[in-house]
Length: 141
Image (cartoon, rainbow, N blue to C red):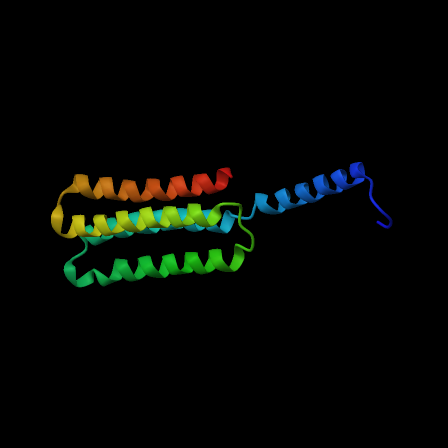
């Protein structure tokens, strides 16, 4: 476009640019959403495995958990090229809550409430719900 723009043309171009940006952001967070869902699945299943494997095999579910979580973060980092507004705050909050729950769950199932199925179920459910809520919040933006 050459020459000066009148206000109506400028507004139309701004609307067009805003629409293009919104379209680009619409699918932006799907690698991160998938990462959160995978984090919830891997951590809740690893917690159950930690509760039932013999002490000599504790390294196995932990190794698998950290391998999968690492793969999820690499995938999200590599393919999540754009993010929605407020993503960093939502992602950080979800990971802080998940991390705190993971620590409580591991200590709880190992020492505080060892062999208490109700605590294991509640902890696995809390980890799952945290990941679901974080993924849902990101998908809803």
